[in-house]
Structure formats: C-alpha cells, structure tokens
Image 1 (cartoon, rainbow, N blue to C red):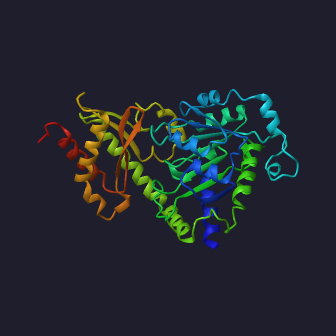
Image 2 (image 1 turned 90 degrees about the vertical axis):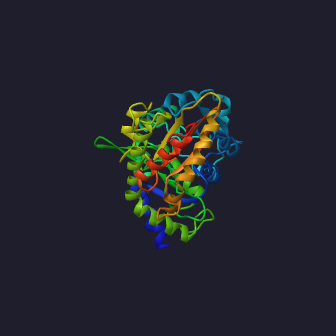
Image 3 (image 1 turned 135 degrees about the horizontal axis):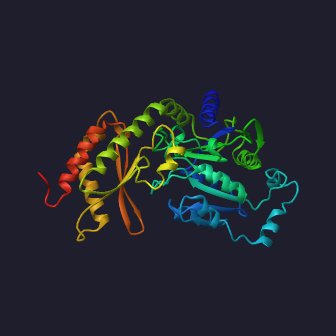
Amino acid sequence: MSLHLDLVHAYAARHGARATWFVRAWDAADVLAKTGVVGTHDRLVACADDRPDRVVKLFRWQRLSFAAAPEADAFLSASTGVNEAQAEAERLVPQGSPASYAHPAGMSSGRLFWLVPSVSAKTLRVADIRAFAQAAKMAGATLVVDNTLPTVFGCRPLALGAHISLESLMGTFSAAVSEPVVAVSVARSQRKQGRHQVADPYAEDAFRLLSFGLGAPSSAAGAARPSDADLAAVAAALDELPDTALQRFDHARAIASYLSCHSSIGCVRYPGFATHPDRDVAARVLEHGFGAYVNFTLTGSGLEGAKSRCERFLKLFEEVHATAFDDACGANATRLALVEIGDLSYLQLYAGLDDPIDVVDSLDQALRLFCNPPEP
C-alpha cells in the first residue's frame, strides 16, 4: 500500500497532476476503452497517423472520426458534422444514474474527446499541445494526450493545457514489468492564469470519469491495478528516468547527425533537425532534448522496393550489432524496426543506453554491406 501511494504521488508530482492511476492496459486507446471514459454516446477524434485499425476495433460503438494530421485545425475539421437533434437527445441523462454523477452542470453525455499523440509513434510529428488546448476549448473537447514516446521526462502535456495524459510504461519507459502498464494522469481543475485561478470544468469532468472507472487514486484495490512487483519495477524506472532518458535523447541526436551525412541514407526525420516540419513546435513542447527516436529511409535502385531494402538492411544491422544485445545493456540496447504507412516503408531507430559510437560503427558496417556490391 505504501509503495503504491508513494508511486502515485511521485508520478503525479512529475506531471503537476491532480492525480495519477496505474492501469493494466496495452496503450492509451486501450485505457480509454477499458475504463469507459469515452461512452457509447460520446464522440472520439483520433490521429490517423497511429494504428487507426486498432482504434476502430476498440471504439466500434462510439462515434469515431480521424484527423489527417496531428494539428489542431485537422482535429477541428474532424469534429464537425455532429447531428444536433441526436446531441440534444444524448444530453438528457436520467437523474440519479451513475453517468449523471460524472456530468457537472452545463455538460452532457455526448462529449467530445480528442486523442492526440504528443509525438506520433510512426511519423515523429510533434503536436502543438498549447494550440490543441485552445482549439479544444473552442470545440468543447476533452484533450487526451498520448505521451508514451517522450515520457514525462521529455514532455509534460498537463502543464501545456491537456486534460489527461496517458503513458505506456513498457518499451520507451524501460520498466521491467510483467504485464503492460499505462500511467493515467489528470490535470487540476484549477489553472493559474496570471494572478488568478481559473476553473476548468473539462478537467473536473475528466477526474470524475476516471474516478468512476478506476476508483480513488489512492486505492490499492481494483482489478485493473498492476501487481506489487510491477509497481516496484515502475518505481525503480521512475527513479532512473532522468539519467536513462537523457542518455537516450543525447544518443539519438548523435546517431541522427551521423545518418544525415551518409550517402546511402535518403531522408532523416528527427524533431531536433531544422528539416523537421515541427522543429519550432518541438522546441516549445519537448523538454531536455528531442526524444529517443529517429526515422530514416535508404537510397537504392528502383529494381528493389523500399520495403525489401529496409528488411535487408535490418537483417544486416542485427547481425553486426548482435553483441550489443548480449552486453550489460541487454534490453536497453539500441533497437531498429521497420515501419510501414501505406506504400511507404522506412526504418525507425530507438536509441539505447549502449555507446552511440558502437551503434554508429554497426550502422556503418551494415551500410557498407548493404551496398551492391558491398563497399570495402
């Protein structure tokens, strides 16, 4: 019980949150579906960049639409077209029902939710969360930010105006948990604006919905709560996060700089580069660096498809960098994965705690072998 309370308070303090819960779930969308935060009469707008097929499966009973890009204008456009008669009918919640407890005065059951990634998992687009917060206020939307990629160390969405922040603690957080765990943090219902405190009814509504679905934040009970062993692993990872995350961020920048100079690399997408479409936004939204992820494409002849080139290079890199997975870094070694969006295929690198010079050397060897014929 003490470990759970200490972890809840520590995580909430990192975010500046009113409360934090830890939930057994795969990702942000899974949490929203499991807890019932987005009801059957609510509307959800999500970003089309990240696994839209999974979102469709999880929210098949809700009114669902997708924004073409992680931009406020795109979400506003995707939020239009609500049937007014239907919305009015959904607003009339029977008094005394469990749902009515979660509806403060002036709010309805037909809510609007925006699920926005702070950094898109596939494209590495960075969302301007302050602009989203302003647009969400205009649209009457609850702003939910998936903050998995940068983690609480690299981005604090609640401080930028989001109502709910969700973070998967497997993979990018490096917590050695036995089951997938997601941290759920909710904003305070009073926000500071100059010298005044301004009430935020959407943050209050979000807190009530989460409390109804997950129980009191301090409660150690609940079917969705992780095991004590997993909570201990999260607590240990949280203590180490400032050091490990900063190393990953620094390593990613060094590796991205190397890739951008190599003749066999076509395009490099890294939020810290001037060529990134959201470079200015990233400087305002992200903290302590620009994240641990780098996307890049490979050059080659038209005789070999992009996916085939990526698969061939991925195999070469894993062969020459195999020793990195056997040293002290273990699961914290640099990882490379194939990403596909429609007909587009490219590689995504997640910087590890292994020496970036060793990673660059492995990349260089793999690129030499990748050439046809191989370079000496």
